[in-house]
Length: 160
Image: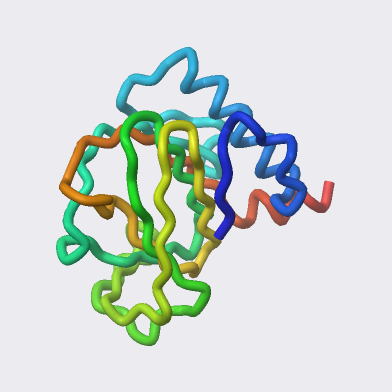
């Protein structure tokens, strides 16, 4: 898990540069078009969607993992708390990996939390448990962009 702010993208030396470049591309795109919808950056390898959503009480949220796509979540309006773990799930409750690249579990190990505000971003690697849309106090509106980056794209881009 990496966390940062769009204002200082160039300073994050621990994040692979190709990923920083993709975040910069999407940053420019959402500055000129912040309409809800799904947008392609590089075919199915890199795309993003913008959603108007609502945070929820912790008990109403689920932890999830993805196998194909790295998640980069950018808060555009509001605030959102994320749960995350550095350890894999002990078990899977709902497995939709084959069809939707997502699986859910309540069996999360050593969950930690991070709160993001406008222009903050958080990156979750494939297989990393994370719980989005947790309310910081009471449920509230949040607008965010979620960038999906195929792990194969990053591996192939690094070989260039």
